Amino acid sequence: MDKKTPTDRLNYSGDLSPVVDRLCAAYEIGEPTNFSVIETGYEDCNVIIQTLDDKFVAKIFSKVRGAEDITRYATILEKAVGAGVNHPPLIKNGTGNVFYTDNRANEISLVLMKFIEGKTFIELDRVPNAEERRMVIEQAAKINGLDYQPPYLSDSWAIPNIKIMFERVKNFIQSEDLSLVERIIALYSKIPVDTLPHCFVHGDFTKTNILKGDDGKIYILDFSVANWYPRIQEIAVIVANLLYDKNRPSTLKDRIALVLSEYNKLKPLAAAERQYIYPYALAGVAMEFLGAHQEKYINGNDTEETDFWLNLGRDGLKKEFAAKK
Image (cartoon, rainbow, N blue to C red; front, top):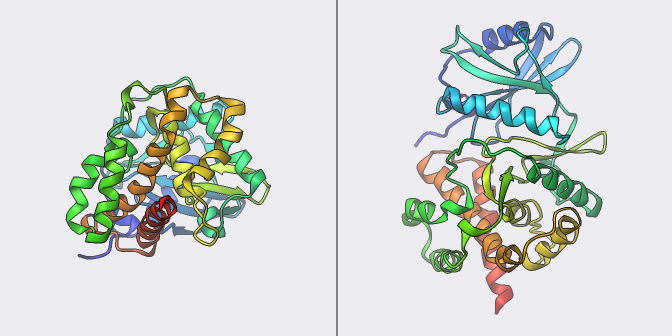
């Protein structure tokens, strides 16, 4: 299977230069001097654009997104930014809209935002320190407080889809890993997911989507899979992914305690959330592992990033069960 690239996700093939020229004109940001495609991620195609005066990121939506999905995404971004969430500032085009459709390039659509100088935590190759962690959790609580329930969007990586994902990829999982995942699914099955407190959830607080700006601020990127979910899903992803440190391992329960020590100051968890946060977060670790199998063996994304998530999930599972012995 050939490796997939971000441009393969578009309903467009060929040179992106004319597309970049037209979007720069539509957003009235000046002529581009150069551009480059960001190679990480699985959802859309993100392009860094440099003009004479400034730097921007265009998020070009993948061919699987329909008009309703694009409108949904733009609405979420506007509401998040309007609520004070630290997200790269959105740019409006000449018609006053945040998204633009290129009718000369198979009607591909995109949003444009300012480029924030800084690095994601996957680029920094470390976990957030105590102050950065506090800022991340502050942003999470702010997002979870948004009074908005968007139309549901299916996300195969979302924790509630763990059983579906497992059935999809189980034939690709090594036998020694299979029993670990099955144990976690058994634990997850006992969680009353539907009755847990739900709210607006970003759902992807991962090392690739949290950026430490050179200005010292924490920025939250990519609301592609934001949904109305159990609130503890936000915390589960943070502890399973963002706070996982292969060089200085800690238990999942210790990481949960770190997050809740800050989150509970802002939005205290209910008793049921406190009861089930650990198995829910454990399922979050398993989903990193299962999702990477899907990308590598089914979707053809055989990349360093995929191997990173696969190893993060496998290592996280093994360390967690080793700690139980």
